[in-house]
Image 1: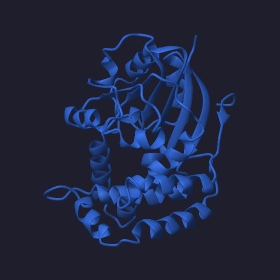
Image 2: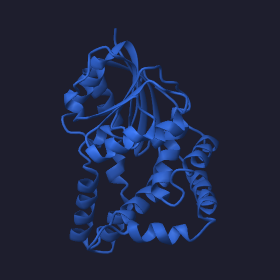
Image 3: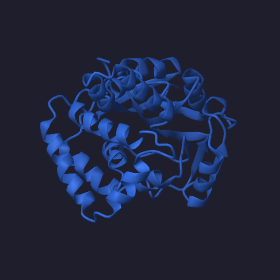
Image 4: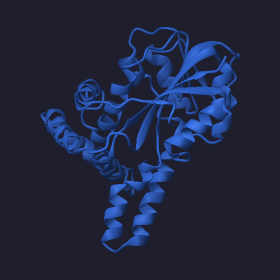
Length: 279
């Protein structure tokens, strides 16, 4: 990683990201925390059209980041999510297919985007080679991923383990991994090697969610996804928080305090990478 430019975000950039993202997720604090960091990192870049969005979801976050882009093709494995994306007006086309079997013409796209999706995808090397093939030579690929710290700093299982229930702690962590289908929580250097093996050159690396922020995020996200007999705990937390109109602003103050406690911004449970296809 010595030859790759590492960019560190500032607290001001992250809080501006929160101000933007909390419009979409005002009462889902783990989502607003994670997306705030991604948003802040993405502000450094501009995607050239046409754009391929891998794991596009419903398209609302893409629209928030780049509202002016029109030539965007989405790909998602979930048919119901893809249907919502088609109706969003964000995408000119939305395809339902696994990312390791992209049925799209080679060299069709000037840039590609994958927001927090690659860590959930099986056959990562095939996924990355497929994206590289669909880009024009020199095309940019902008993406966010989780790192190995995502599991190492997982706070709720650690707390339960410290209370003496190691079996329940491991079960909770396994359930969390299964819920997210988290198959690629890789160290940054392994992500970089994976990009290079697929024919990419890594230009910039931006660590996101350093330790204190990560531990709060992971505690809230673990808690949110605790299974219930029907649904998950977040199904109860969301309507409760909605009854607190001041919650988004008050939570911003909590995030501000956590950012003030960060000591090492060079290591995070997530990372944003800007890479480009070699000519």
